[in-house]
Length: 90
Image: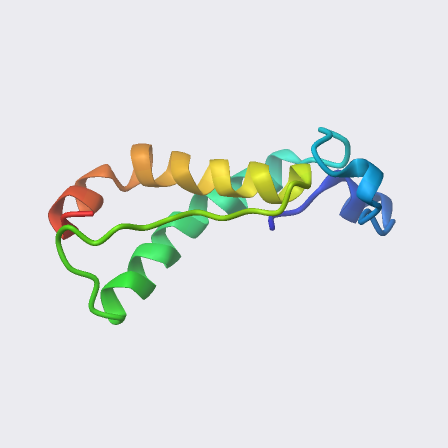
C-alpha cells in the first residue's frame, strides 16, 4: 500500500476493528504512489506475457490504506495509462 496516515504517525494499524473503516487511509503521497503503481503493474504484465483479452483482477484487504491504494492504481490505469491498456488489449 501507499503511504498512510498511520505510517506518518508511526503507529501499527491492523486492528480488526479498523477493517472497513476509513481510518488511517492514504496521504496525498500515498495516493500518488498507488496511482504510479499502475505503470509498474503494466510493465510486469507485459514482462509476464499478458495478452489481449486477459483479465486483471484486483483483490484488497478491507483496510482503508489497501482499498485506497487499489483504487488509486485503477485511477492510474484509467487516466494515466489508458492508451497503453488499450494497446495491450486489457
